Image 1: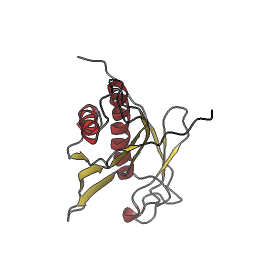
Image 2 (image 1 turned 120 degrees about the vertical axis):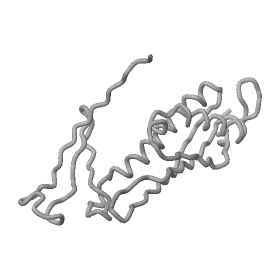
Image 3 (image 1 turned 180 degrees about the vertical axis):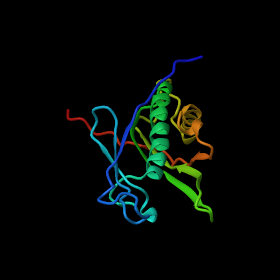
Length: 171
């Protein structure tokens, strides 16, 4: 069995106001998440649930965690495969359904990574192709701790790769 890793987060509700939860509308959903000595992350609920739209909500953070985990594994595996990634962006979208009784559940998250590579070829001169990157994305998905831990599909629909234009050097 492999090593165990523990992640600690301190959560503080800051929205009690003068009357706390005296009614559904009497309190703010605002809270702070602190992780070690990092700056606090200001959270709330989704605006549909009386949250502050200027703060992060748990649903956004879940989608963000999936996108970040995939990206970090992709970069690691691309590096190991000899692919020089010079830019990576993603426009991830999560879909959640709320049932009549108010219960909610994510239905899926779709990652749409856009990768820019610095060289069109691997060190062995094989070309860097969309198929090669698709395989790296597949492996990243298999390795991502977060996607392996959720009970809904996490799909990836990569945008076709781009190769960065080489900047001419002064001679």
